[in-house]
Length: 227
Ligand SMILES: [Zn+2]
Image (cartoon, rainbow, N blue to C red; front, side):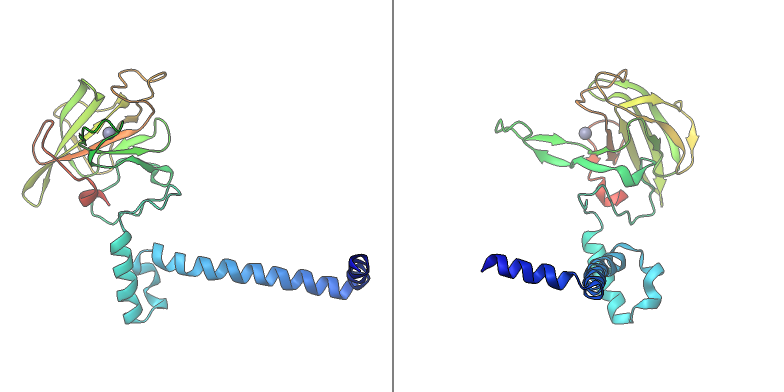
């Protein structure tokens, strides 16, 4: 019985037109499925200015809400959506994933909470590290645990804010230097085997902090500023 059914299928497939129709049908179905997935992704991930023309004003509000809810999310594919007047601290942002969030956590399940005073961003090894905003270099050198690191002082609408970049493989600025937003201040690093002055780091990444005043302990959540 089964053999008969198989033979019948083979007999049917001998018809070339039918075969072509099946291939065309499957292709169209695959294309349709891809479009159904990609169109909403495109709408949700693109800045509203780029897609306004395609949307009614009601739809614009919905997309804006979804984008603002998810603007700080790591999509798990290396994509981080940035929605801020600040720049991003690494040049190749599309390669970056967040490997450790800011805040209290218990990394080795010891029952003791440790505060992670910044956010860890991992992308391309020795990627250019950029000033997120124009400012003055107030520290450039080596600190215990942080290895090579840089601290910048910014003036944001009259408020002093500091940003701190650690585990660098090289430092490209000097204390007292003024830098513009996007200026290359150093190179990402922290690989304990290949980078000098890696600090406390098991793999290459940028430890990035935002502080309300200079020095350790004045940290705030970087996500509120950068993403
Ligand atoms: Zn860190």
